[in-house]
Length: 171
Image 1: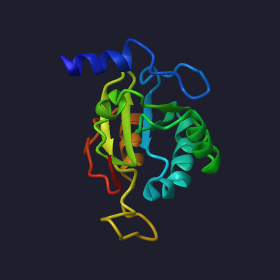
Image 2: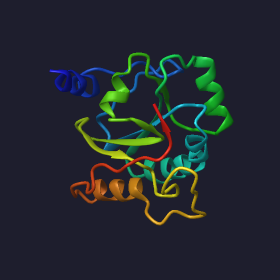
Image 3: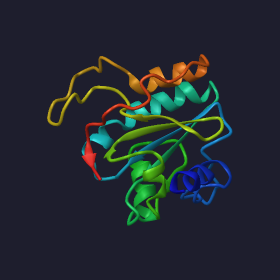
Protein backbone atom coordinates (compact mmCIF):
# COMPACT_ATOMS: atom_id res chain seq x y z
CA UNK A 1 0.00 0.00 0.00
CA UNK A 2 2.82 2.42 0.83
CA UNK A 3 4.62 1.52 -2.41
CA UNK A 4 1.48 2.21 -4.43
CA UNK A 5 1.07 5.58 -2.73
CA UNK A 6 4.68 6.50 -3.47
CA UNK A 7 4.32 5.55 -7.14
CA UNK A 8 1.20 7.73 -7.33
CA UNK A 9 3.19 10.57 -5.78
CA UNK A 10 5.78 10.24 -8.53
CA UNK A 11 3.46 9.83 -11.48
CA UNK A 12 -0.07 11.02 -10.83
CA UNK A 13 0.54 14.23 -8.98
CA UNK A 14 3.27 16.79 -8.81
CA UNK A 15 5.89 16.68 -6.12
CA UNK A 16 5.98 19.44 -3.58
CA UNK A 17 6.76 22.65 -5.44
CA UNK A 18 10.40 23.56 -5.83
CA UNK A 19 11.88 26.45 -3.84
CA UNK A 20 10.94 28.83 -6.66
CA UNK A 21 7.27 27.76 -6.58
CA UNK A 22 7.29 25.62 -9.74
CA UNK A 23 5.70 22.18 -10.01
CA UNK A 24 8.10 19.26 -10.42
CA UNK A 25 7.40 15.69 -11.57
CA UNK A 26 9.44 12.50 -11.60
CA UNK A 27 7.87 11.33 -14.86
CA UNK A 28 7.42 12.55 -18.41
CA UNK A 29 11.03 12.98 -19.56
CA UNK A 30 13.16 10.16 -20.98
CA UNK A 31 14.36 9.93 -17.38
CA UNK A 32 14.46 12.13 -14.31
CA UNK A 33 17.43 12.19 -11.96
CA UNK A 34 16.90 13.28 -8.38
CA UNK A 35 20.08 14.03 -6.47
CA UNK A 36 19.30 13.59 -2.78
CA UNK A 37 21.54 15.77 -0.60
CA UNK A 38 21.87 17.53 2.72
CA UNK A 39 23.54 20.91 2.56
CA UNK A 40 26.07 20.20 5.32
CA UNK A 41 27.41 16.89 3.99
CA UNK A 42 31.00 17.45 2.80
CA UNK A 43 30.88 14.49 0.41
CA UNK A 44 27.64 15.73 -1.18
CA UNK A 45 29.24 19.16 -1.52
CA UNK A 46 32.28 17.60 -3.21
CA UNK A 47 30.00 16.14 -5.90
CA UNK A 48 28.40 19.48 -6.89
CA UNK A 49 30.67 20.11 -9.92
CA UNK A 50 30.06 16.56 -11.21
CA UNK A 51 26.31 16.95 -10.66
CA UNK A 52 26.40 20.07 -12.85
CA UNK A 53 28.53 18.38 -15.52
CA UNK A 54 26.17 15.40 -15.71
CA UNK A 55 23.11 17.67 -15.85
CA UNK A 56 24.66 19.83 -18.58
CA UNK A 57 25.56 16.82 -20.70
CA UNK A 58 22.41 14.72 -20.28
CA UNK A 59 19.76 17.46 -20.21
CA UNK A 60 20.53 18.01 -23.91
CA UNK A 61 19.55 14.36 -24.40
CA UNK A 62 16.11 14.63 -22.78
CA UNK A 63 16.95 13.87 -19.13
CA UNK A 64 15.52 16.10 -16.36
CA UNK A 65 17.36 16.84 -13.11
CA UNK A 66 16.49 18.08 -9.67
CA UNK A 67 17.97 18.35 -6.20
CA UNK A 68 16.08 16.99 -3.19
CA UNK A 69 17.10 18.24 0.24
CA UNK A 70 16.55 15.26 2.52
CA UNK A 71 16.13 17.12 5.82
CA UNK A 72 12.63 18.47 6.31
CA UNK A 73 14.09 21.14 8.60
CA UNK A 74 15.94 22.69 5.65
CA UNK A 75 14.57 26.16 5.03
CA UNK A 76 14.00 27.70 1.63
CA UNK A 77 16.70 30.26 2.44
CA UNK A 78 19.20 27.49 3.26
CA UNK A 79 18.32 25.59 0.07
CA UNK A 80 18.74 28.76 -2.01
CA UNK A 81 22.09 29.50 -0.39
CA UNK A 82 23.24 25.93 -1.06
CA UNK A 83 22.11 26.15 -4.70
CA UNK A 84 23.91 29.47 -5.20
CA UNK A 85 27.07 28.49 -3.30
CA UNK A 86 27.55 25.37 -5.41
CA UNK A 87 26.21 26.75 -8.68
CA UNK A 88 23.49 24.12 -8.97
CA UNK A 89 21.40 24.81 -12.06
CA UNK A 90 18.31 22.69 -11.57
CA UNK A 91 15.08 22.76 -9.55
CA UNK A 92 15.48 22.26 -5.80
CA UNK A 93 12.84 20.55 -3.65
CA UNK A 94 12.78 20.23 0.13
CA UNK A 95 11.42 16.87 1.30
CA UNK A 96 9.14 18.13 4.08
CA UNK A 97 7.50 14.73 4.62
CA UNK A 98 10.26 12.17 4.08
CA UNK A 99 8.26 10.58 1.25
CA UNK A 100 10.84 11.46 -1.39
CA UNK A 101 13.69 9.98 0.65
CA UNK A 102 11.70 6.74 0.91
CA UNK A 103 10.73 6.83 -2.77
CA UNK A 104 14.37 7.24 -3.83
CA UNK A 105 15.54 4.54 -1.38
CA UNK A 106 18.02 6.98 0.12
CA UNK A 107 19.82 6.10 3.35
CA UNK A 108 23.10 7.91 2.58
CA UNK A 109 23.75 11.09 0.62
CA UNK A 110 24.56 11.99 -2.04
CA UNK A 111 22.23 9.50 -3.71
CA UNK A 112 21.31 9.66 -7.38
CA UNK A 113 17.82 8.27 -8.02
CA UNK A 114 16.76 7.74 -11.63
CA UNK A 115 13.11 7.48 -12.67
CA UNK A 116 11.99 6.32 -16.11
CA UNK A 117 9.43 8.09 -18.30
CA UNK A 118 6.56 6.55 -16.27
CA UNK A 119 8.07 7.62 -12.93
CA UNK A 120 9.34 4.16 -11.95
CA UNK A 121 12.59 4.08 -9.95
CA UNK A 122 15.15 2.28 -12.13
CA UNK A 123 18.40 3.21 -10.35
CA UNK A 124 19.31 4.34 -6.87
CA UNK A 125 22.89 4.73 -5.76
CA UNK A 126 26.17 6.49 -6.09
CA UNK A 127 27.09 9.01 -8.73
CA UNK A 128 30.52 7.42 -9.19
CA UNK A 129 33.12 5.59 -7.14
CA UNK A 130 35.45 8.46 -6.26
CA UNK A 131 34.82 7.55 -2.57
CA UNK A 132 35.40 3.79 -2.33
CA UNK A 133 34.95 4.12 1.46
CA UNK A 134 34.77 6.85 4.05
CA UNK A 135 38.00 8.78 4.35
CA UNK A 136 39.37 7.61 0.98
CA UNK A 137 39.04 9.89 -2.03
CA UNK A 138 40.35 8.88 -5.45
CA UNK A 139 41.67 11.67 -7.65
CA UNK A 140 39.53 10.25 -10.48
CA UNK A 141 36.64 7.79 -10.30
CA UNK A 142 37.11 4.41 -11.94
CA UNK A 143 33.39 3.77 -12.49
CA UNK A 144 30.75 6.37 -13.43
CA UNK A 145 27.65 4.55 -12.16
CA UNK A 146 25.07 7.27 -12.84
CA UNK A 147 26.38 7.96 -16.34
CA UNK A 148 26.30 4.21 -17.07
CA UNK A 149 22.67 4.03 -15.90
CA UNK A 150 21.67 7.04 -18.01
CA UNK A 151 23.42 5.65 -21.08
CA UNK A 152 21.57 2.36 -20.61
CA UNK A 153 18.24 4.19 -20.42
CA UNK A 154 19.02 6.23 -23.52
CA UNK A 155 19.94 2.98 -25.33
CA UNK A 156 16.61 1.43 -24.23
CA UNK A 157 18.40 -1.14 -22.06
CA UNK A 158 17.58 -2.32 -18.57
CA UNK A 159 19.64 -0.54 -15.91
CA UNK A 160 22.17 -2.98 -14.46
CA UNK A 161 23.03 -2.71 -11.68
CA UNK A 162 19.89 -0.91 -10.51
CA UNK A 163 21.30 -0.14 -7.06
CA UNK A 164 24.78 0.67 -5.74
CA UNK A 165 26.05 1.48 -2.25
CA UNK A 166 26.57 5.16 -1.51
CA UNK A 167 29.49 6.41 0.59
CA UNK A 168 28.67 9.66 2.30
CA UNK A 169 26.57 11.06 5.10
CA UNK A 170 24.05 8.67 6.63
CA UNK A 171 20.56 10.09 7.17
